[in-house]
Image (cartoon, rainbow, N blue to C red):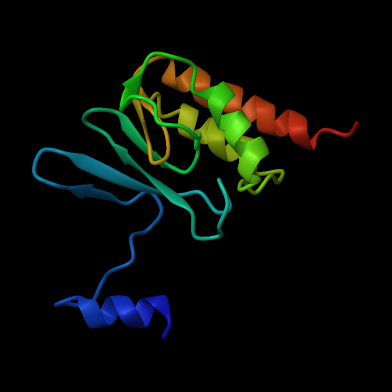
Length: 141
């Protein structure tokens, strides 16, 4: 069974695909859907940006191992790069760094991580540092 068929079977009405950049108002919270193909890994990758709180729901973008606190003021880039070295889960292509820089341009105030400690510290700078690190990994040696 295809994932779409399974989803259709579980829903009480047909699901609707969100368009890139589409915003949904959730009663005072505005969530923007942003396609990020292959960033961090799969073709159908995407993130959500809650515009009223400027929270970027990063998915696997800053994945790191360990059992840290829910929210940290510590660096999240170093642990994310260590996680990448451990898991090799990111799809590093010529569009990876520009896609992450596009997310930094949103000027998020919170980076909500799926796997690791979220942060409200230097969010834009963290995204740019991650983009720079991935770009450096692709540079000829």
